[in-house]
Image (spheres, rainbow, N blue to C red):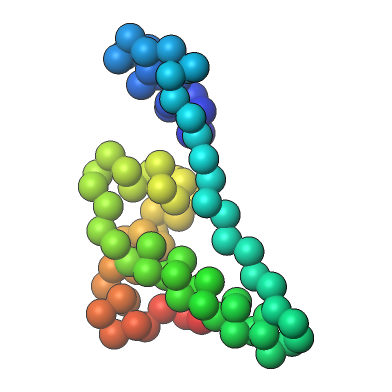
Length: 87
């Protein structure tokens, strides 16, 4: 979904694919023991919930989470003030 959209945007803007770089800041959970993994998992879930809680502009909603996650994108901002997202 991302690459075709990028290519369409480049075409509209008259740019070449070689003019852009794509990076992906993945999140990894590690720990020295089960308790460490559990703590790291909770931290990553909290970070992802925060990202989901920010209200996107209409043009970024699909790009950020994909079409199947549209419902979550609508619900998360309402859950964030009370930190009511599932852990």
